[in-house]
Length: 238
Image 1 (tube, rainbow, N blue to C red):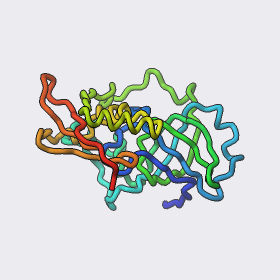
Image 2 (image 1 turned 180 degrees about the vertical axis):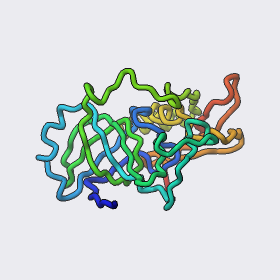
Image 3 (image 1 turned 90 degrees about the vertical axis):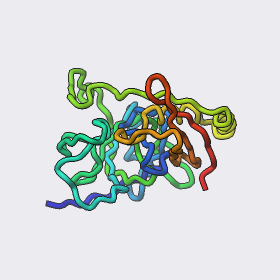
């Protein structure tokens, strides 16, 4: 059976490319997005009562997944990228139906320039992501205190993140102009360690990601615990 669903909106996110996006929602609370509702779903009546919710379920399409074929087994990053699990036991974007589900914090509704926007935070969504549906998070049924997952029983270990003096100064200036805590946003994202876990970090290699209107660059340096991240440069994206 096949079904066709309309996109009710598009995500306008701080994440401009896949690399660097947190692997789960809520891991970077400062990561924000706006969900722009599309006609005919941009009707304020459809959002009546949403202000009573602290969090929302967002159903979306993995639109940047370039693989045309699905596989019954995948290699989740959480397991180091070298151990396979059944696709239905993971949250891999490579699925028979490339549909994702994220719980995000609801920050408010805005009408601007003829657009109806829902402000969100704690997101793990790529800019341009098509949204299929919005549902309220209902704590008494959605929160399951005794739930278990043998392969992801606790949050992943965080890696230490340091910023060079120049990047700290850049973040301070950016905060004054844009009213955004860029330094801590970068820390929240990079402490999740976006590097593929099977890939050994090389001190001479510079990694980078597009964030907001910026290019953020970092490298891995050795320490007693193994490695830490040093953010070495931040530039306006070209």
